[in-house]
Image (cartoon, rainbow, N blue to C red; front, side, top):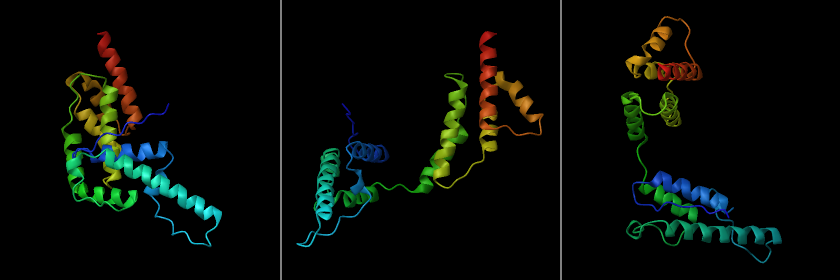
Length: 194
């Protein structure tokens, strides 16, 4: 039983909704029409293969359209095209909820550079969250080097980790993200034992 849940589009969750739709259509093996155009109309000279492709595409389109429309709040459907393909509907919805990449970049940078490790949770997860923001920024063409993340992580750790900061600052060699993680995790374990 492969059940897939599609979060209802509420207006503020477009990215998640789109991911859910794409995943659900992939699981239902009807995703191809989200990325391909409608095949040409059938004629009397159409081959059996062309007829099969056309029938499969039409069925996939119906399933995708139904899934998409059922997962959008009624008042948000206003103004969306009615007589269209699933691909065209996705484009129209994407245009409606398009967010400026500059706004995304600003938000991600603000979160990344305002993060502080508060001692709750694992320090490994804290550093990995920073790497996640770095990766999201990279997809928006803002490439922060690993050394920037290492410095930011070290600078936002509490005073209990000062020995790690001192060790790093006294070396000429830069650490990789994995080096940083292994060192701060070892220090975290040592601090727990004290």
